[in-house]
Amino acid sequence: MSGTMTDAAAAAILEGRTSLGIELGSTRIKACLVLADDPATVLAVGSHEWENRFEHRVWTYALDDVWTGVQAAHAELVADAQRRHGVQLTTAGAIGVSAMMHGYLAFDESDELLVPFRTWRNTSTGRSSEVLSALLGVNIPLRWSIAHLYQAVLDDEPHVADAAFLTTLAGYVHWKLTGRRVLGVGDASGMFPIDAATGDYDASMLSKFDGLVEERAFGLKVAELLPEVLVAGQQAGELTADGAALLDPSGALSPGIPFCPPEGDAGTGMVATCSVAPRTGNVSAGTSIFAMVVLERPLAGIHHELDLVTTPAGDPVAMVHCNNGASELAAWVGMFSRFAEVTGGGHSSDEVFEALFREALDGDPDAGGLLAYNHLAGEPIAGLSEGRPLFVRTPDSSFTLANVMRAQLYGVFGTLSLGMRVLAGEGVELDRMFAHGGMFRTAGVAQRFLAGALDAPVAVGETASEGGAWGIAVLASYLSASDGLDLDGYLRERVFRGDDFNVVDPDPEDVPGFAAYLSRYHAGLEVERTAVRVL
Image (cartoon, rainbow, N blue to C red; front, side, top):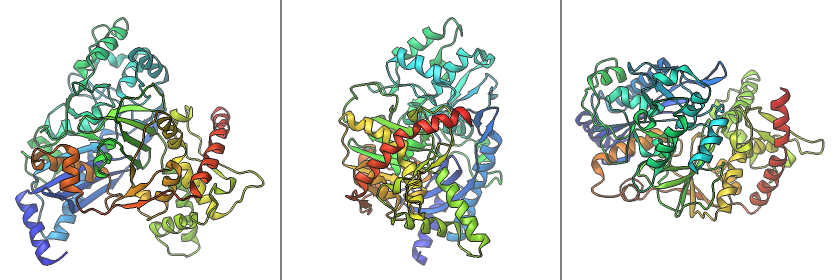
């Protein structure tokens, strides 16, 4: 960056002409500072690695770890701003918080957590999901907050009687920083169904739920437990003095900074890929993998593979959510990284990733008859209550490094493709699918294989690996810079204008090759189910 640009950036940081985005992902908490009037310009970043725990058969994160991680990511961002621009960050024009969608955080009247945070990864709500889907006439996925609440009612959990407030992880962090119990409509749509006409929780469904639980949980009114719903562009509170001290224990950060509505990672992924308009969609790949497709019209049927959620502006979206994404792939790469280390190769983890991804390009279109299942956790779309990662081959499979890596990459997209087939059966059409997440940093590999899996063009932008932290920073910028534009218009005209997306069309050999792989993948799920029963 030139001296003039550095001086301008330093002035923007000192004067608060910036937006700060914080996202709590599955494995990393990231912070991203951008210019408010040009959010494509990233000024500083910070991150902190963390990991979920499997305790008492529940996937969870400790709330102490939430704040340790948020503070560490913010501190690293502050240090990065100091290093790059020579100034200390003490304020910002706006702040936004994003996090993993869904899950269950229940608090009592004294704001005490009643049970450990139950994340999206848990699959213990099968009975609840089935009953609610039939009652409400829409698919209620296992991970939705309302499914967790009703399962707790069914299981006669004593904490239900003391519940005074339910929220998501993003809603929790936002509440502690601002004092406001609110949620962006995209994240709220993963708590309880949203009425497209009102942009709020569906009133008739709220009434049906209250009637359902009346005998088991007398007096429970679900609307009283849920956060207020806001849409992109609405102010959602300000940083309080207590919130400033919580975010920045050094005391340098000033209170009074406005906040945009807190959102889920699905919503920020749509923003980060400029895919909030009908006929656009995006795939986000991390610990989980999911596709968001903005709908032109309502779906004809109810499908357990599809969630009906919304964009941050409240427009209807079909979501294909898979609990298992790139973690198993990363474990395999980690094994090869260790091999490189013990043999004195001296290669970094990123170099090993790139080398193995490039090797996959030389694999057979169908991965040589190999199969890779990435199911570390249960996978509802595949009908699995628990995860069993497996690598399967037959005696006549072509067992080469290239095919092994192609099978692992295909495996990341396997369950997602089963759900996308359902969307195709509904006649949903896409002009282009956008992709983001760390696995797309190696240009032209995962992107190419995803294009073959979807049989549709896949676009990746320069912000592909920044993901939701940048996306929520953009939503924070939208608070003051929209100038009457709707969210889609703001993204196209103010954020992504002139931005060059790299677009890859499906390879003619990859499409039938992946189709053959997926056919074996679907048939081989019986092996997975057997593994769950016996291992």
